Image (tube, rainbow, N blue to C red; front, side):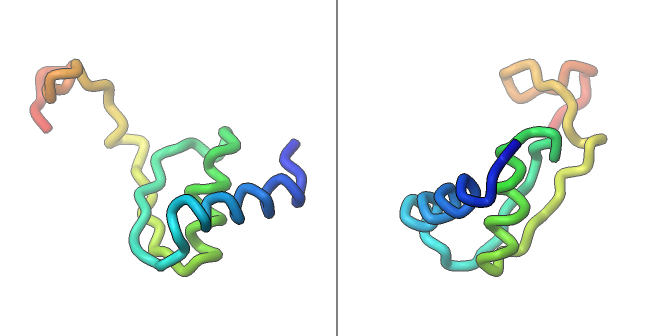
Length: 73
């Protein structure tokens, strides 16, 4: 479980590491993972525009820029 204290300390650290000037943030992490707190709550609390990556666009990549199913980027 993530406590309020942990989130506040994490947000403070992110403010120092990345700054808090609003911009756009691409959220690709499932909300099942604790790092999604950064992608959703920290960004929204700082005035960022959050872009949610659709699951359909998260196809595996072969590592050389080609999609595994043969389709290009």
